[in-house]
Image (cartoon, rainbow, N blue to C red):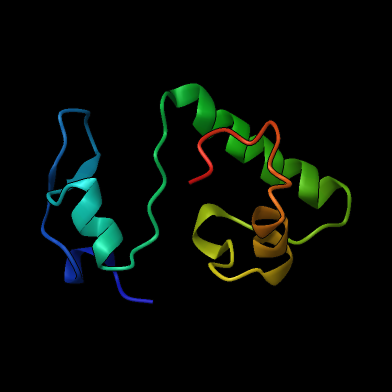
Length: 90
């Protein structure tokens, strides 16, 4: 993996100690970079909680950066339309 600032222009964000990628979401997606659309800070908390639950139940020790991009069982579920209740599956 390469640091994001070697792949895309990055600039300081309004929030202190934060940066943002200068490309829009379509450019990021076209480049094949991992993109997560978060509709609110509450979603970040929920994602973090999911990782905590996985660890607590002896599941994989994942972070946003280590979620596998390719997961055949997940794609089989999506292909079978087994996605009821999954928000924003495209």
